[in-house]
Structures are given as C-alpha cells and as structure tokens.
Amino acid sequence: MYRFKLTGLVLGLLTLPLIAACNDGPKNPKTSDPSAGAVETLTVYKSPTCGCCKKWIGHLEAEGFEASVEHPANLDAIKDRYRIANNLRSCHTAVSSQGYAFEGHIPARYIHQFLANPPADGIGLTVPAMPVGSPGMEVGDKFMPYRVLLMKKDGSTEVFASVESAAQQVQPLQQPEAQP
Image 1 (cartoon, rainbow, N blue to C red):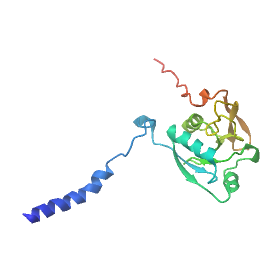
Image 2 (image 1 turned 90 degrees about the vertical axis):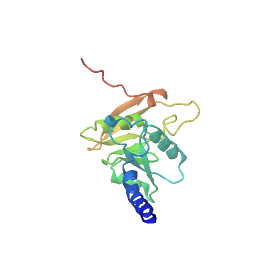
Image 3 (image 1 turned 45 degrees about the horizontal axis):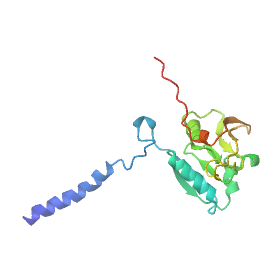
Image 4 (image 1 turned 90 degrees about the horizontal axis):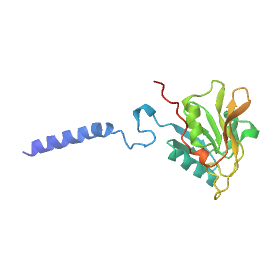
C-alpha cells in the first residue's frame, strides 16, 4: 500500500516541472495578442541616482516594454559605443535587442513605431536634453513642445516626430484602415 503511494508521489513530483514549463506566465495586456509578437526588452543605462530615468522606465513598462536597468561606471562610454553625438545626449540610453539606441525621454509610442519598421539608415531615436513634460519629466501641467529625432548611420538626424502636446505622447498610433 505504501509502495503505491510513494510511487504516485514520485511520479507527481517528476511531472511538476513539465506542467510548470507549459505555463506561459503572466500576460501583458498590451502584448497578449499572439499577433503582437514577443515583448521587447530594452536595456536602460542610467545613473543610479536619476529619478527622472526611473519615471521614464515606468512609462516604458506601462506601454508594454520590459526594462533591464544597468548603472555603468562610465555612461559616456555607452553613448560613444552606440554613436550618440554629444549634442544629441540626455540622461539615459536604452538599447533594444536588435542594437538600436533610444536616447532620452522618448515616448514609448515612437519606440514601438521605430521597432515595427526600422529605417534602413537608422541607428535609433533621441530626444536631446530633457524637455519639460516629456515622459519622466512631468512637472504639473507644464509642457514644452519638442522633437523626436531619427539618428542615422552617417551621423545626421531628421525629425521623426514633432510632439506638440502632452496628450500626443500617449495617443495610440494611427493604424492604416483595411482596404476592402
């Protein structure tokens, strides 16, 4: 009798890891649709004491990204590695799994847009400096219009998006209408 109970217990313990491995884990509501693909993880390089960076990471995560945070001893070396010119720098640098760089307080919607269709000559996006009202830089209801710039392989930039209002930062991107 005890032998059968012991055998059942052992079999149950052996199958537990297999059952657990089949669990997909928690679903992110922004990416739980199978057609949406996997959740993108951005590695964020920042100073350990920067509060606005922490707020920006919260914005990213609320918009469907995962963030892995690192605090390098030399943040400028990271920016140099990803070819971010001095005049385009901000307080933090995020890097996608594909190696694209996202510098500063870029709204997540534009990072999603960039990653969905990366320009052939693009190395990433930047919001130079730290515009008041951008994600992570909220100060009451104050807002300063700013531009999201596309950084190119040849070192040049072009405007990727002009952000004229705080509401524009979180509006869903317009999807093309289906053609009959």
